[in-house]
Figure 1 (cartoon, rainbow, N blue to C red):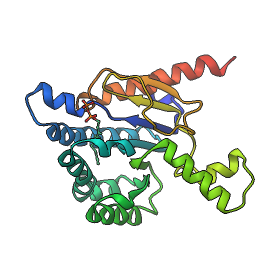
Figure 2 (figure 1 turned 45 degrees about the horizontal axis):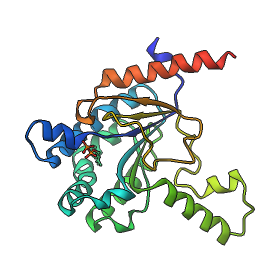
Figure 3 (figure 1 turned 120 degrees about the horizontal axis):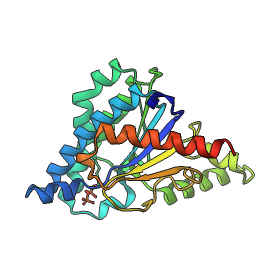
Length: 228
Ligand code: FPP
């Protein structure tokens, strides 16, 4: 029954790393390291469940306000993650893509990301989108600027061409962990019709079983409304 969910795009706000660490008397950065382990599990599961797009809110345009040491630490994580897991991602046919303005990221992180995007470009399994230095309002302003510069009429189709998600379906399901119930400037345009699932689990505690349950719950909601 759990295989029936027709779900092509899942977006996740991975919240709660800091609290997870603080509750254990660890440093917040330990929480982010543990958060990477959850990313590994969930990416694998999403691929198994035939999800086509998985978009992870990894660093928002607002996250620069955190202490510099934490910012630096988070911005090294994509590089470390790719160094360790790129071979496995290749094996699992995962294609990597970035949403956001990566020009402000550290040089070595940018290079690691570009390398991963190039290397996985021909993979046609799960597309894994890392939202990095991403903000929904900033994305919309960028899109309007580019639309204006191109002399396009203002239409939904034209606007969508200039979003980071051009060519992708809108998210079917948003999962937010960590107990907060807000959108935090994530995919504002794209989530106009998205179903929301809020979990009280902190991201390092978020399990494959909970992920499966969120997909199954989506399938039920879909069936209920689809028939009307
Ligand atoms: C929110 O938790 C989490 C972040 C801002 C960072 C998210 C990053 C990861 C999960 C790891 C990145 C993974 C890869 C593969 C690059 P928080 O720190 O706001 O937690 P809190 O609300 O408990 O303080």
